[in-house]
Image (cartoon, rainbow, N blue to C red):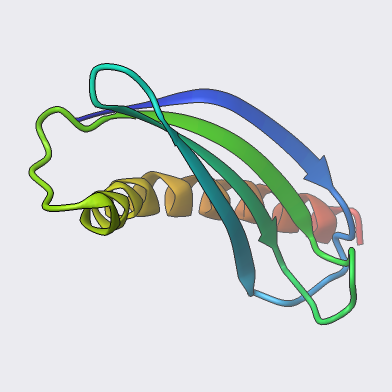
Length: 107
């Protein structure tokens, strides 16, 4: 299994948002040679108010699934998400920490 970050966009929205909620929209496209292209739209610090969040990440990952054993499409997607959860969580944690530190230093 190989995981490659293919594209990343970052948008800072409202650093005063205190929510720790994360909302992720997920789409995928099957490519050749058992590669899966995964599109993630992550809203960190998500709130009940539309378009209010701390920051947004748009990511595209390419996952080579040739070494992953799966039974069907749902199983493949579950395993792909399990592969993504760790790196995505690490990236969100680092960025969120940096944003909060910068905000605290400006107070």
